[in-house]
Image (cartoon, rainbow, N blue to C red; front, top):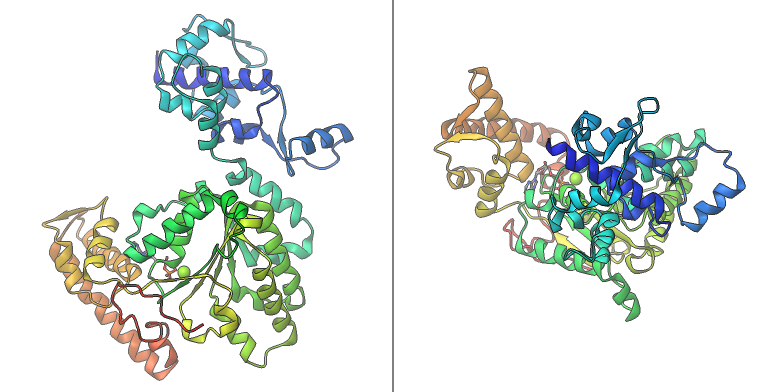
Length: 467
Ligand SMILES: Nc1ncnc2c1ncn2[C@@H]1O[C@H](COP(=O)(O)OP(=O)(O)O)[C@@H](O)[C@H]1O
Ligand SMILES: [Mg+2]
């Protein structure tokens, strides 16, 4: 018997349980299972089907019973390459050679066999089976269901929704404006990021607020759920927003605000509307609006009227979206807080400062980004001490240089010297870049250095800004 046997039997038991108990819905299936059975309608569904979909409050697809347990679906759901071979020796399994259908000849024996081989943690990952074994184990169904990722966080569900919303050709450009990611597609977690105490406190606060939305609604507290991330480029604003989405199992809707000036300007206001509509439909989700300073810039200058209209639509949409009412957490980000006007500041209820990392933080960041690397006599603190002023993103670049340099000598083990050399190389390049900037865009030299001069580049992370 192989490990795969438990996986395949679990799959067969689950499919069987789901098919026979109509009270289960897609949120009772492990994400890996429902991905296999989720079908996006291709249009032309008959009335009956539509009605049953409404009943399940599924808007853009569904899972039809019975769940077909074939070699193919079993493989896709469990990752076991030879699902039949994995269970063929068990006396309670059978395969129909013609259709490839795998089945359980004796469900009770299969259940006994299975529950003997798994622990409570594993049962908790499968709501259908958690319900079945509630009596003979310590797991309970409600906990399992709560823990299970909701379908709204699955790529298949997101794709179905997007297809429904942006199906005609005019909508092509919309896909340039928004980028929707399923949490499963984000590879960064908050553990991979080195945060200031302040940032951590804000993140924890918002995570709690998301968790207890119902309570906040009950007590009428609505002024929460709009964050502005402020700090120089490369300090982790985008990464933190994404990691939060992943850790909270929320879809991540990213708007590139500069795309607002796309050539189809006339459509932009409509697209902004649609973006918020999509976010509301995908909810609970995180809506991330990058380059927020762009708003202020266009308001001030004599831009095209259509652009102004779009920006006003954006500001209005922000006013009309809420974490408590719509389950949308809004995160704005800017490298240029100095360019934001009062109208923009006013729309956020928390400002989170992303300063350049101090020595301690740089050392921690180095440790995180080198976790999987081999470095002899590694002394991150020593490197941190010679990298004053560098951001997390700069440090990644330094490490990349060190790795590539070593590879040219056919080494995959680095030394502390390699790192020091890479720092030197980085600084040389940085100097060249700055000289270039003095000639060109002087603003870029000081842009976003710090906010209102109050947080002098340390990691204290004060919330200083003028409302
Ligand atoms: N505090 C940090 N801890 C770990 N990695 C960081 C940190 N800050 C930046 N990075 C890394 O630098 C890169 C760029 O960060 P990003 O989130 O895009 O910055 P920003 O959005 O502020 O410009 C990412 O790969 C990120 O992982
Ligand atoms: Mg960014």
